[in-house]
Amino acid sequence: MIGIFIAIMSAVFMTGMQIMLKKSYKELDPSVAFLFDMLFGLLIWIPVGFIFGASFEGIISCLPYAVISAILSEAFVFYALSKGNLSVSTVLISTYPIYTLLFSLIINNEKLLPLQIVLIIITIIGTILTALDSEFNIKNMKNLSVLIPFLAAIGIGLSDTLTKGIIDATSSFDFIVAIAVVQIPVALSYLLITKQSFGKIITELKAGMKEYKYSIIGSLLNVLGTGCLLISFNYTYASIASPLTAIYTPFVVIYSVAVLKEKMNKANLCGVILALLGAMGIVMIG
Image (tube, rainbow, N blue to C red; front, side):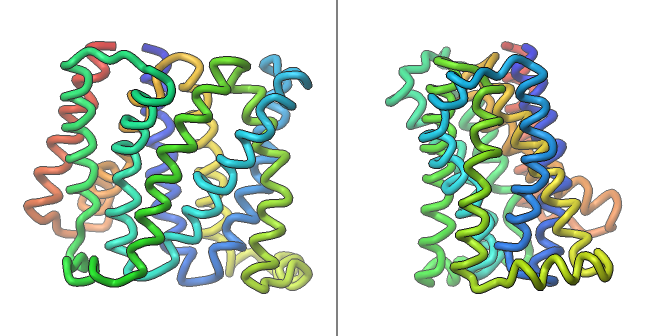
């Protein structure tokens, strides 16, 4: 049960991350957002990891898997959300629990009750429906740019599955230290590829953080949310934790309606109901 609770906490943090990072893409390149993600990872994940018993032997074992996670579950997702139609990209990326479920059953041999599988599928369907917004157009699915978020969703599913496997052999706290370390070269490489000047970023930060406020807040929430997801792997299956963290999309819809007074379409309403019912069912089964 504790793993399920931590996974839901991850969804809460991811809700804020999604709201902030969407705004940040209007301000700056996603590689800069990922730079802040890396910095917060260093500040938060490393001390937390060692406080809760991370060992150098475990960290070294996690390093290859941490590289995969940093690229597929972090940097590539930042990149995918910035390409093509954002509404389409969001929907496609929100399908990642499907691939986590499939890879977990195949690679990690996770054993789920038939009812758990049904509830997970209900949660995934609801999550996808809540990601549909008024700007979503099925015609945009024909654009080659949809390939990037589609691959990102598969990448997250594969990465989460492999991460769960190595965490079972070590611990979540070994892994979060490892990923904090490997994100340094990944983030710097991302900046280099996108031709962003590290010196310019530092200069602008010294002058004031107004331009980067959404990216900074979003990156902090992403680090907290990702940390909760990784810790939840200590206590429950990836095929259960992943769909629960993905319910941040209905949380975003609820926030948009309650706070921003945006209108909810029928697909969103149906999605929120399905996602929350599925999540509640998973919680009740434990």
